[in-house]
Image 1 (cartoon, rainbow, N blue to C red):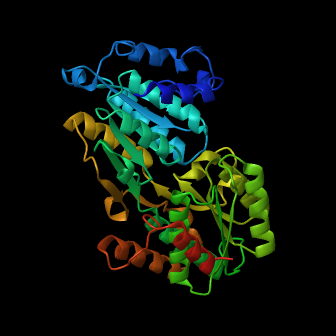
Image 2: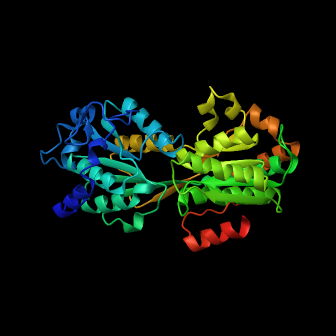
Image 3: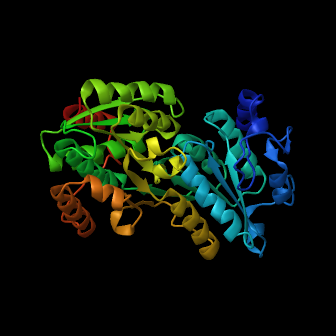
Length: 401
């Protein structure tokens, strides 16, 4: 590694790196048990002490030693994307303990703190480094500096920027799952459900503009809703942050009360909590994202009963499986960017008695037709993946208000 790059990153993050590593499978974002000079938890230091500072390179890890695997997330508690990554990583910590030391590193939202932590992992003897969309540029930089380390990027295609054929990408055709969600939302809005009157208006609250994973959800949501009812009205907002539930709640109340949205798809990380709360206050419906978020409200039935469904992608399974694949095969399909979807059981929506009770007979039929058609290829769901921002935004603006 070029030392000046590491020093530059360190200079910008010297006040932040004390809390970089959360430790293997830790769910605590605090500083308890951490060595403040390194930014690692005491458990991580024990797991990596045999590789730190000894000049060990990747070739030495093929002699039966445990592999060192680092998964970089922002932080736990968003109740969707990053928590799902952490869940799969935590399973890997336990299930692969005989073959690997899996470190789940929380670096909050700070790009420079993450970059420094990634360099530290590489210097500590990492064999495999995994991260996702927010930290894609950091992964490109570090992968180009360390040709002997394997890297995995989730939900962003940066393969062309990586110079050493040591990066594998995984993404999710979440537009397919959101398409199903769009059908559900349009049916609820057209026919009413429970105590919600028919309005022919549905909503969407996203975390950040120009975030491809969020845009992929919105693209599918629009297509499914329009397939059900070409005249459906779709309103949307971006919060501008992943952890600002107050703003998300304000936007949602406007969509519910002023625009008349019968249901809102909350696709905003930790900000989505504000949408969930607004649904209970407005007595309208909400969709969760990435996992079955209704389960978060077992102790608050007023909110839980407002969940019509959740649009899910199995990020945790992807993380778990790719670590297992690397440990089993000793390699990954570098240079590839694999997109998994409904046919792979990697995306979908939460179904069951609650959803059945909200859908009309027409809605149930349309949903089953769409699921079968997407799986066998007879229904095409266009994806935002691989498209330029101008095209993505034009589609959204042409179909939403």
